[in-house]
Image 1 (cartoon, rainbow, N blue to C red):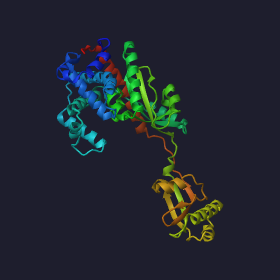
Image 2 (cartoon, helix red, strand yellow):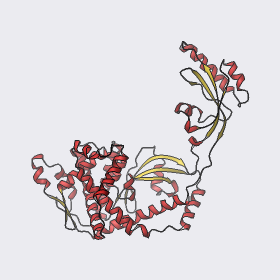
Image 3 (cartoon, rainbow, N blue to C red):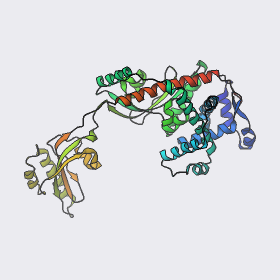
Image 4 (cartoon, helix red, strand yellow):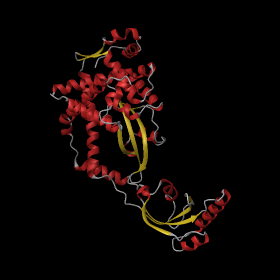
Length: 420
């Protein structure tokens, strides 16, 4: 791909053009992609849509910061549409309508409300439709030309399952990514700068998933960059080392990989094949200690201290009646087997880590105090992913690499002239 030098500075200047010159400047050509024109109006509309949908503060400086990557995205979309057309693949109005409906559903909007939301915020709905048109056509092209070539053998699945079995207890991470490809050495500095600006915007409050949908060049862009749960052993070493230090919601600085820059954020952490504590089934009994409505704070503290002391002395569930009598409480109530996840948040917090045969801290209720006694705890057997799940994960990884190569080849063969 050939681009006129210093185009980023020229884009920034054009984006910040005075209002008086807006009408004339919008007729100008932003770029020509294999004889097809991207106008400055197209670019401005997409920038406004990106700023609006991503939660970026709408300032002239913010628009300048995203301009370079937005133009790059528009160029890629034009290449994708051209390639799809070559294979007689298009997106119908029904296809675009379904894509818009999916956005509304994903964001909890009323069906058909998105166009009016765009209008109220001064955002071009046609810019979104153009984006959906390229995405649908490209997805169909990929599914027709690339997906059938992806073959995952039984041996590969066996190997992954064996690694997971050997890695029981290892950390696995819920990750989201934004991938920006670098296709030639002269792009290195500009793509790095773009990646750093995206990280800055994310840390400033921009929505990671929205930016991933707009800018990421990985297949995960369609799902907001969601990589799912990834074992530590399958991460790039530099990412694995950095992720260990992250808290949920934090984002890494851009990481240079063989093919480009990756921006990664952490959604959560757990252990491979570890049992979810909330799936535990508890055998519970409770001791209810009534408290008069007119009890003063000092009296309530006294009752609470007595309940705590009696609870600390409980060893097993065989003699709870005696403890209840000493507290002036009702007879112990057998609650039977209860899933931890089905308990209220307050009760769950108090009993989650209580050993079998011991009582919780006293829990305040509107009518009195409650001691929860854990008489048994059953944990479900931890399972590894099914063969079908592993097969699908491998297929998506292989397809993602094929898509990146395909788009890289299209860029290399294209004639792109930035005219700003």
